[in-house]
Image (cartoon, rainbow, N blue to C red; front, side, top):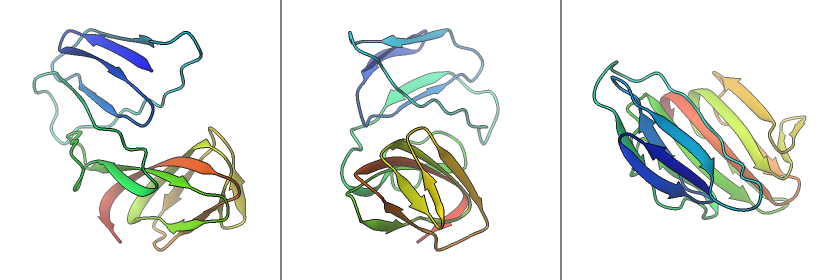
Length: 155
């Protein structure tokens, strides 16, 4: 787990959870491990739709269920104030799933081995896909990934 402290809120983020810190007009913050063992997390910075604004902090519900689960944007409960959507996905060995049809995708593997076309991605590997709809990915073993979609997104 990861402990967040800032001038606009505090919280502990566990596996499968998402937090959003909007710096807006300025914020002081720190992130630190909240457990004795190693802590792994992914941090992404996005350009907001509108610059400025008041700083804020929000945590989301757990998004660790199977399949492609919306965590941010669209129908998800958490809005990041940017034209982007974030999905988490867990796949059992040998299964496949279609990615959202979007002008830009960023696929990040958090565990296992994922196959995209003829390319295999392992833990902490990423792929950027532009202007290619209908992509399918498959798990070479049990696999977990994050998928950022920007631009218009459809299924």
